Amino acid sequence: MYTICLVEDEKNLNHLIQTYLEKEGYQVITFEAGQAAMDYIGSSVQLWILDIMLKDNISGYDLIRKIREKDPNVPVIFTSARDQDLDKIIGLELGSDDYITKPYSPKELILRVNNIIKRVYSVVDHKVHYECYEIDLEKRIVYENNKEINLTTLEYDLLVMFLNNRNKSFEREEILRNIWGEDYFGSDRVVDDLVRRLRHKMPSVHINTIYGYGYRFI
Image (cartoon, rainbow, N blue to C red; front, side):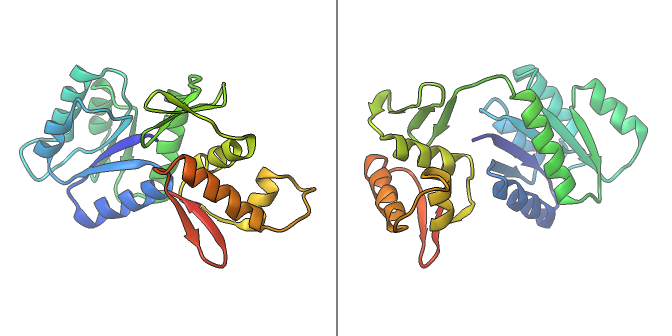
């Protein structure tokens, strides 16, 4: 899961963007003040979204300078209520990857975030980390604290389907089609059994039951 730091001093906008990002499956750390964000720099973050004008004495420009000292490659998106070429030029010179002017559509910001994440982290990485687990997608092996977990093919395929669709609700019939294939004929209760087995082997996975419907992985 990619971690995004959002620095936005407009409280309502901060919460709105956080909600949109989390629905996309990102882990979001939010700050409403520059100093709190400054103190967090150096932590593991895959993208920063910085408001240029903040209420305290620290600006988005101050933050990106510190970010670039720690990590010259992590992507940064600037947001600002001022649509001025000078702001954009300064942002680019300081190493920002994008600039969006307020007011903006949250969906537009999400599109830009997704594009940057895809571009920057498109280098093949066959390992996915979730909670205490490491999933090697190339070898189809799951580890818990460096100890291999013995999953069946169906259990592994279900796990990967959920990992690729965080926060999405699945009907049992949809899981049947995705895991067993279109030609499967039988009770959809095999889905419940498969989920039960996956939960047993990986107790730290968060699979929510939606009664009368199916499951959601968070």
